Image 1 (tube, one colour):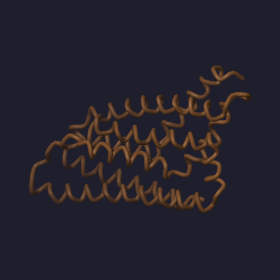
Image 2 (cartoon, helix red, strand yellow):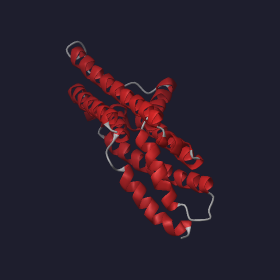
Image 3 (tube, helix red, strand yellow):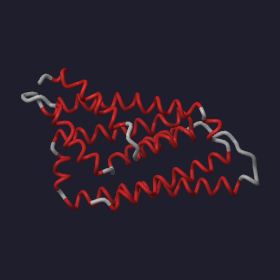
Image 4 (cartoon, helix red, strand yellow):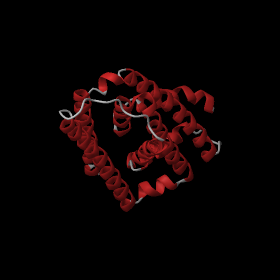
Length: 214
């Protein structure tokens, strides 16, 4: 079957998979709620950079080697779980600090993200995606279904991955824009504290689940 004929099924599959809840969605929602649309942009771009790197690794056969290695999968799974728990604990600490400071000073607007903060958010998104062993297994199982026989595997996978990245960036930035429009409400001290506590709990639960999975 020709690649063009496979594109509608590919696009539909990407949209359904991207809309499913997980660490990426939790990070984007929290970032957009706390920092607004602009603050969520580096997180989205970091996640997609990590996804594209996994896609290239899958095309080159590296992801298959990782998936075939029990030790490598355990290392990636544990590293990913630890990082998610770290992000969750950091959100909890933010909730505790805002509760402690509520009686001391009124709530203030979040300052604009600096260049260092932009790259930190980008790095967090990339790390979360690269430390997810499901991403390696997904790439190995997903992309070959949409590479027609006779077409170069690496080039076709890289092209399809670019399309997936473009679709997900549009989807996630649209979601961030919707959440960001309610940013003033989310950044109210009491709401922000509850948001940090909830998102921290979700991230820690995702980390524990990742660590416990076989």
